[in-house]
Length: 543
Ligand code: CFM
Image (cartoon, rainbow, N blue to C red):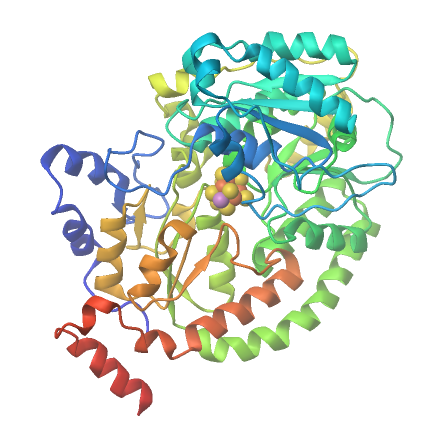
């Protein structure tokens, strides 16, 4: 097994040739053959989608409310807008939650919206918003209320920030708003940045209660999809490392207001939260580096790096002990599964980090990733952070505020900075992200913001054994006879992070790629006479 089909150069040409000239020029920059993984070529990323091309992207509101802030379980989230935006963001992302401390409340089963009507659009919706905040407060008495602007709110010019400030005064609780109108920026990535700014301004640093623990960290960019954060919590508890806040999977308001007391930030999803890591380092001196708990090699490497950061022999030994014990459970599963998965192929088109992270899990199983791409990541997520200075800031990015952060005169922790410096002198790396392309094999395809046409072409040409993607194309892929694993929601499964997560994933992918049912699938249109391929596959599968 392995990739059969044309060379990547030819596949690229076949994808592009259907397009009109202007589209071809644009898509040509976003579809690359990874010719030199050591020094990746420049990819067109974070640019506007060509209208009509059928993208998988979401909007700024989705990135802000849905992704970064929505998972905080005891903040009351109110969508200011017509009912659809609140409805479609109601528990549709599988960021799981349970109350962590006595006395806390979980509001995430509710969806709150101002339900804007035509007269609010005509006469303004500010009164409606103030009323909604008051009503929500009377009903629930939360610690904090967060308001999200949708497209029409920006178009009519409702000033949500002054309404929030007024209500903050009136109610005596923290009330803050996000100007994350769906049209801001070119994708949900803009919403991440807006969310980071708001969390930093309105929550980080409010509670200076010291946390007594030898090893205190925050995990940034981990959203507890399918319970991933809980598996990471389990491993850290075994190692004796304290997580103050996970931003923002399964986290409470109090955890976030206190998380600047940590000694270290580790970043899982670089795309959605690198801004926060940088701002916290500037203001409080907390160093950060990139980790990955998806895949056993990634998990081991990340744990060892954290232990090395603290530098205590006791912790370093404990981490090795935990790894050895966990691996005794992983190894037999992996050995069994690998007999069937080795040499099989996968393609991954997901978000802004998983198309990279999940390559580790497939590699663990001996599978080859023949093509991958993000929906909305930036060049640094593809080519590595060293390209940051050369990224052009266009009009769409300029729309998003860049906060000016300075070191906190009292709370900047200089001893963290000293530790960072001495570790760097011994070769330890911080603020590091190599990006996806360096890790991919030579001559694989890298496709940013893939269109349905390109995806169908890819399947026609290569028939990968599995595709990791989302619900927008899952059933298109499966109708073409290829199993699709949703790597946003995990379908109904998970966790896939850490050691237990890896076991779940190995079994799931083994089940999907070993099943013969896919070769028997026939789309209705294939029954109208031209189905020799499907018949041959059926004969082979039943033989
Ligand atoms: Fe980060 Fe995410 Fe992702 Fe993302 Fe997302 Fe997500 Fe994703 Mo869906 S924060 S970039 S905006 S890892 S919701 S948990 S799965 S597209 S790859």
